[in-house]
Length: 67
Ligand SMILES: [Zn+2]
Image (cartoon, rainbow, N blue to C red; front, side):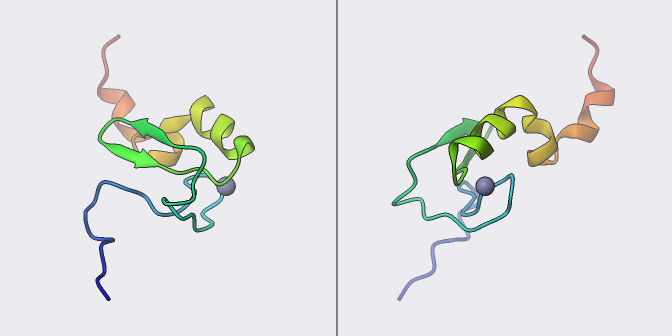
């Protein structure tokens, strides 16, 4: 039995509601920046896409942006 959860690429839980998801069974897959996220349902997917920074911890970096 090998643990392969340390790769740092895939988030094995829903980024929105934090419930665990199985990447092998996930029907929804979001590739955002360097990571792949697996929302558990279409509702979480739309919520994630509406405000991805909130769920990826990137929100604080915005203040350095100069758009
Ligand atoms: Zn969810």
